[in-house]
Length: 544
Image 1 (cartoon, rainbow, N blue to C red):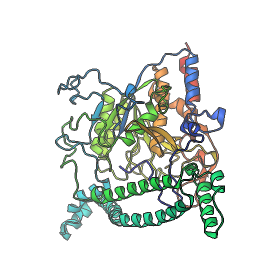
Image 2 (spheres, helix red, strand yellow):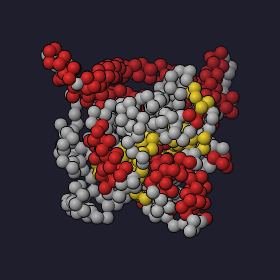
Image 3 (cartoon, rainbow, N blue to C red):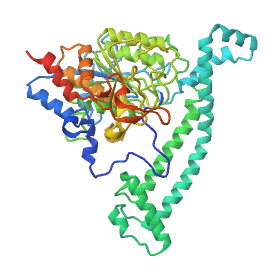
Image 4 (cartoon, rainbow, N blue to C red):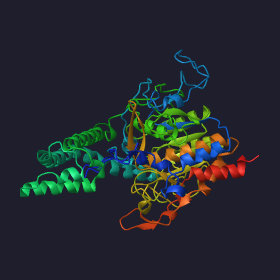
């Protein structure tokens, strides 16, 4: 999978998402704010719930399938809202409910090899396409290769595109480790020089003003520190020792990523499935729904369903009314089409009414399997939310798989599929700089920057990406459905779409110099507002 959470910057500015005490609570909860009350493009969660309770409506429970990297199911802010398969008896090694999956108590893990053993690292789809098609188009037998090029022109074009991506990325990853180490040396030398001057001073404007400016060197160091805190408010209140520690953590993380890209993501010899194919018998995998790295899925799950008002961490959008079904199918790499298809079907067959899919990739060689699963979920009236992706591209002309549109087509496959772009809390830059968009192929926007949520080891953290926007929208749908269970999936979708908050602000999009109205970047032209949506739902479907 192409990571939907954006990588942290390694520039001197260190534009990271480390939280500070000042205005922390407001920042943590910004995406719940009500636009009508604050002018911030939050979704109005608290106002919506207050309205629903004022009408004495009693909610039902909605099961949300979180198709992701796994969820820490014993997290303090999630465990009360984890789905439990009541038809299955835990630990008896039997398929009690006859659904094809043994002991699937909280969901299922499809990221496993042919023997059911978990894996974390996987290759990118471009790598797998190169492996698949090299024997057909670059076997060394020119006559046979040429014949195959003529016989399979579409596959050949896919191969050429994938090979270009693979070649560039593989060699870039191999070279990047040394570059990052070199950058680390430069940045740490810069920070250590300032640390020798400021010692353990907490960097606030007031404290920095008290530091010595007796010499030219002192003045220069003082100016550099002032520049750092002026341009990086997240560093205000930290000492340089603390900043150096965090910088080292970032460098370590980047080196690990590039090293992993070379060893796994772009390694044509690496196959963690041990040759598992799309013909694998249903039931492959295991019931370890957390998996080796549940950061992404836990963060997504918390946005939807972290327990509300329990004095811990944060509040999920629908934390009073949902159960989270963990369907692990996203590794550190690209998800496999068969796992996506089987994950969708598993969630639907086991009672999920809403699916969240915060993942995406540039190639999908078995896309028909996924299309069939999407149609299946659609036929069952399940709402599917998918992250638009983080390439700042127009999806009307570029594809982020899985997609609700076949290649080069503008007619959707499913009526219950919703593609979500990411918005910010800043009205003048409402579109997140990284978010994909599309007048036809992106449906709505939702908050997707500076989103505070649950992560493994009983912790919380900010993250950003359309991965965060999609569960905000999915949580909103679940909240509506919980209080108005007789509504159809189309009716839930309609009230969400009809009540968005639009903006004609001019925002930067796509290539350099390209600017458009925010209202032209999606089907609805706006950011979801669940407060307005529940009021419309009550007006249309709630009165008796």
